[in-house]
Image (cartoon, rainbow, N blue to C red; front, top):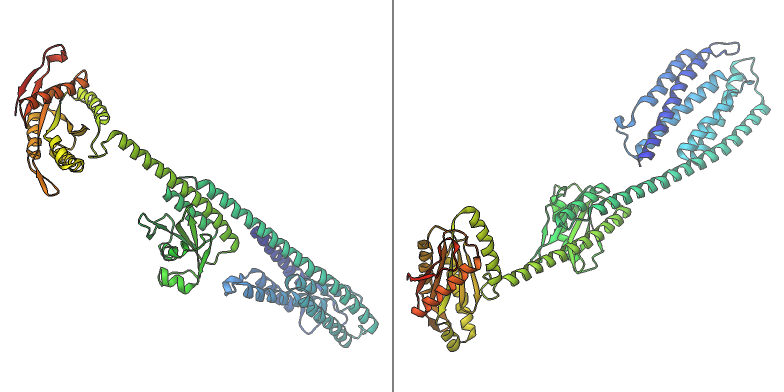
Length: 535
């Protein structure tokens, strides 16, 4: 398109140069013309020269758009004005400067015929040909009547008129044919250039449609529609609940997004490749009365199994652009399907990872996750220089609940116990279920054993409240063992084992007991721990 536009500009420049040269040459010819016997024609050559000079330059320099002549019809009228002026200039030269019948300026009468054929086709050239024949005959009759030295020769007139008709018709026909071929060639080349531009835009947009981020996909889709020639574009998508909603997208028109949202449900019930075309009234009704679009087209984005989005483009869009948009939308649908598949895989991986490191009943971390956190917290506490404590919890009387009320009731009880323990400790502490009715708590940033004992007492108090299991109300307690280290232990597993030993000591002494174990100073694991009942 850029080359076509440049050629049109060059042609316009050539026409202006030709008229400028004519505006200088014709007046010079008229001023210096030597008329036979009577040097005083009806119009003085000097006055006519000035008049033609002004008219030719006026037609040459005036921009028709400044006169309100915009569009094919107005420009055609301006071309008619140009043809009339050029014809008048040729007639003036032939009439006033070619009075001598022996001269050859009469051949210039072919020029308006050629111009008419090139600009308007064969019909206009025939009309101008008839006018030029009449002008030539009238010129010879007028010259013979006005100048005694000039004689009217019918044979010469017939001969020259015949030549003028033959040359004019052949030249006009060839010029019209050449003009049609040139226009056809320009149209074909323009279509080829436009097609190449469209394909280049499609290729560029396809390269950009590689991100698995839906926002990037929709942004690139809107940008491609605008680059292809759409006056505006908007996107609507199907959300997680299956409802159509507008999608805020960079460069998108909210009004067209509203159109896409309202047409979207209709796209899901038919072929997703169908294109819905709306008139200006429908666009104004859906997008708002202030919308400037004379039309809108809505295309479905098929995400593989279903329509996942809709693209609305504003303005009258050609079939070529719609085909390009359909190609882009198909690619975008494939990318969105891949994005959805990757998202499902990611969610599945997270779910599997969660299941691998969490208890399926309570949702608490399991033994593997607890061990990893304990090692990480141990390394962190080594750098921070603060203490750690492990509380090992075993429920008292849980087996009796399972045996009398069933496993379902036991599961409900375990879920309630997990909820109460988790609510009792601080957000940064870790509560895990080791299996059965055993739980463990990792307390961080513990300054002394007293803080660990206080946490254990809060847990016992939380578990002391009865739990309703269906029609039954169950009371339950727990035995808790405490292992505290003022600094990070060399062996984190040893801290858990000592808390486990303290828990068994608490269970041996009765229900609802708390026992703390003193570790050897400086990590001397060979020293015998000392058990103390603290609750």
